[in-house]
Image 1 (tube, one colour):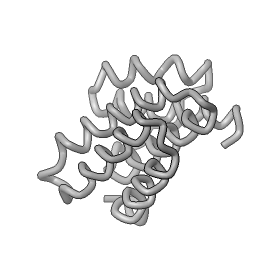
Image 2 (spheres, rainbow, N blue to C red):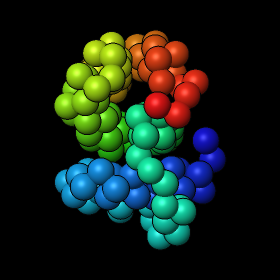
Image 3 (cartoon, helix red, strand yellow):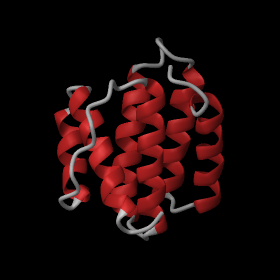
Image 4 (cartoon, rainbow, N blue to C red):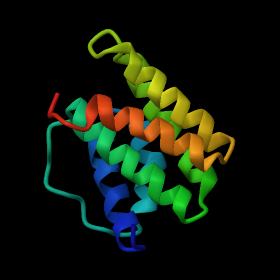
Length: 126
Protein backbone atom coordinates (compact mmCIF):
# COMPACT_ATOMS: atom_id res chain seq x y z
CA UNK A 1 0.00 0.00 0.00
CA UNK A 2 1.40 3.38 -0.93
CA UNK A 3 1.83 6.09 1.68
CA UNK A 4 -1.17 8.17 0.48
CA UNK A 5 -3.36 5.06 0.64
CA UNK A 6 -2.66 4.59 4.36
CA UNK A 7 -4.39 7.88 5.34
CA UNK A 8 -7.36 6.99 3.10
CA UNK A 9 -7.63 3.56 4.76
CA UNK A 10 -7.48 5.23 8.18
CA UNK A 11 -10.16 7.74 7.20
CA UNK A 12 -12.40 4.87 6.10
CA UNK A 13 -11.90 2.92 9.34
CA UNK A 14 -12.47 6.07 11.43
CA UNK A 15 -15.73 6.69 9.57
CA UNK A 16 -16.86 3.08 10.07
CA UNK A 17 -15.97 3.27 13.78
CA UNK A 18 -18.06 6.43 14.05
CA UNK A 19 -20.99 4.66 12.36
CA UNK A 20 -20.59 1.85 14.93
CA UNK A 21 -20.71 4.44 17.74
CA UNK A 22 -17.24 3.37 18.87
CA UNK A 23 -15.74 6.70 19.88
CA UNK A 24 -12.59 5.13 21.34
CA UNK A 25 -11.80 3.35 18.06
CA UNK A 26 -12.69 6.43 16.00
CA UNK A 27 -10.47 8.64 18.16
CA UNK A 28 -7.56 6.18 17.96
CA UNK A 29 -7.85 6.03 14.17
CA UNK A 30 -8.65 9.59 13.11
CA UNK A 31 -5.08 10.92 13.61
CA UNK A 32 -3.78 8.24 11.23
CA UNK A 33 -5.91 9.77 8.47
CA UNK A 34 -3.50 12.73 8.33
CA UNK A 35 -6.14 15.04 6.89
CA UNK A 36 -7.48 12.62 4.27
CA UNK A 37 -11.09 13.46 3.48
CA UNK A 38 -13.64 11.13 5.03
CA UNK A 39 -15.16 8.68 2.57
CA UNK A 40 -18.78 8.69 1.54
CA UNK A 41 -20.92 7.35 4.35
CA UNK A 42 -21.37 3.60 4.21
CA UNK A 43 -23.30 1.15 6.33
CA UNK A 44 -20.90 -0.71 8.60
CA UNK A 45 -21.39 -4.28 7.39
CA UNK A 46 -19.18 -7.03 8.78
CA UNK A 47 -17.52 -7.22 5.37
CA UNK A 48 -16.73 -3.49 5.20
CA UNK A 49 -15.40 -3.32 8.75
CA UNK A 50 -13.27 -6.44 8.30
CA UNK A 51 -11.76 -5.48 4.95
CA UNK A 52 -11.15 -1.81 5.81
CA UNK A 53 -9.66 -2.69 9.18
CA UNK A 54 -7.49 -5.43 7.75
CA UNK A 55 -6.22 -3.08 5.02
CA UNK A 56 -5.25 -0.51 7.64
CA UNK A 57 -3.51 -3.02 9.93
CA UNK A 58 -1.53 -4.42 7.01
CA UNK A 59 -0.54 -0.95 5.81
CA UNK A 60 0.62 0.11 9.26
CA UNK A 61 2.63 -3.09 9.73
CA UNK A 62 4.20 -2.73 6.28
CA UNK A 63 5.25 0.81 7.23
CA UNK A 64 6.85 -0.52 10.42
CA UNK A 65 4.21 1.20 12.57
CA UNK A 66 3.64 -1.88 14.71
CA UNK A 67 2.26 -0.10 17.80
CA UNK A 68 -0.45 1.57 15.73
CA UNK A 69 -1.15 -1.68 13.88
CA UNK A 70 -1.54 -3.42 17.24
CA UNK A 71 -4.03 -0.78 18.42
CA UNK A 72 -6.11 -1.22 15.27
CA UNK A 73 -5.94 -5.02 15.47
CA UNK A 74 -7.09 -4.83 19.09
CA UNK A 75 -10.12 -2.74 18.12
CA UNK A 76 -10.98 -5.21 15.36
CA UNK A 77 -10.62 -8.17 17.75
CA UNK A 78 -12.84 -6.44 20.31
CA UNK A 79 -15.49 -5.62 17.70
CA UNK A 80 -15.62 -9.10 16.21
CA UNK A 81 -15.56 -10.74 19.64
CA UNK A 82 -18.59 -8.66 20.62
CA UNK A 83 -20.45 -9.65 17.44
CA UNK A 84 -19.50 -13.34 17.45
CA UNK A 85 -23.10 -14.43 18.10
CA UNK A 86 -24.29 -12.60 15.00
CA UNK A 87 -21.43 -13.88 12.92
CA UNK A 88 -19.55 -17.14 12.92
CA UNK A 89 -17.24 -17.28 15.98
CA UNK A 90 -14.28 -18.18 13.78
CA UNK A 91 -14.19 -14.52 12.70
CA UNK A 92 -13.46 -13.53 16.30
CA UNK A 93 -10.74 -16.18 16.46
CA UNK A 94 -9.23 -14.85 13.22
CA UNK A 95 -9.08 -11.30 14.53
CA UNK A 96 -7.68 -12.54 17.84
CA UNK A 97 -4.95 -14.29 15.86
CA UNK A 98 -4.32 -11.14 13.86
CA UNK A 99 -3.91 -9.14 17.06
CA UNK A 100 -1.59 -11.72 18.61
CA UNK A 101 0.54 -11.84 15.45
CA UNK A 102 0.80 -8.06 15.19
CA UNK A 103 1.65 -7.83 18.87
CA UNK A 104 4.47 -10.31 18.28
CA UNK A 105 5.49 -8.54 15.04
CA UNK A 106 5.07 -11.89 13.31
CA UNK A 107 4.47 -11.05 9.65
CA UNK A 108 3.91 -14.68 8.66
CA UNK A 109 1.32 -15.19 11.41
CA UNK A 110 -0.34 -11.92 10.43
CA UNK A 111 -0.56 -13.12 6.82
CA UNK A 112 -2.11 -16.42 7.96
CA UNK A 113 -4.71 -14.63 10.08
CA UNK A 114 -5.46 -12.19 7.25
CA UNK A 115 -5.96 -15.10 4.85
CA UNK A 116 -8.45 -16.71 7.27
CA UNK A 117 -10.31 -13.43 7.73
CA UNK A 118 -10.52 -12.85 3.97
CA UNK A 119 -11.78 -16.39 3.48
CA UNK A 120 -14.54 -15.87 6.05
CA UNK A 121 -15.51 -12.25 5.38
CA UNK A 122 -13.88 -11.13 2.16
CA UNK A 123 -16.34 -12.45 -0.35
CA UNK A 124 -19.57 -10.84 0.68
CA UNK A 125 -21.43 -7.93 2.04
CA UNK A 126 -22.64 -9.67 5.22
